[in-house]
Image 1 (spheres, rainbow, N blue to C red):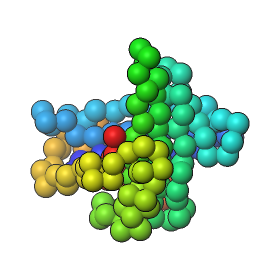
Image 2: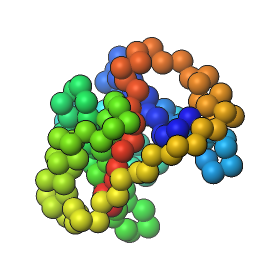
Image 3: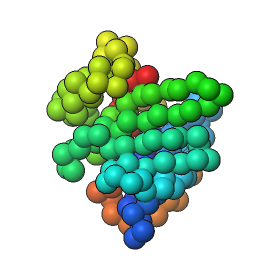
Image 4: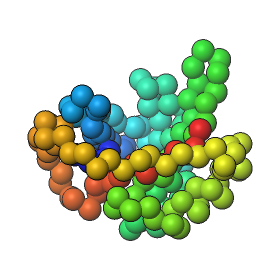
Length: 149
């Protein structure tokens, strides 16, 4: 596994099931699965267990990229961030541009964004662990590309 992978599945009841996998420095694969509960508005979700009060798909072209808005409330502190996901490891310029445009609207500074680095190393153990996932539709595989927080 060279870079993080996210599998997104829309469930029959409208909830969103997410699987994430990413290589760790010691060569293993860290996996996480979560189900986000559908909100009152289309494209809005939440997950009380992760203290994510609001998760929204704020922009997508349905083919190349999606920008997510995430908000958490923990210990009286509110945290907000944007994340860019794409279906290919290469940066999709329109997605990055949309994330930069949305940043000021949610109180973030576009210049403080970070792109996740590509890793040239392959970890065979991590790849084996993450390959065990069954993907109903490979088109739903996405790459986490960047984040603004």
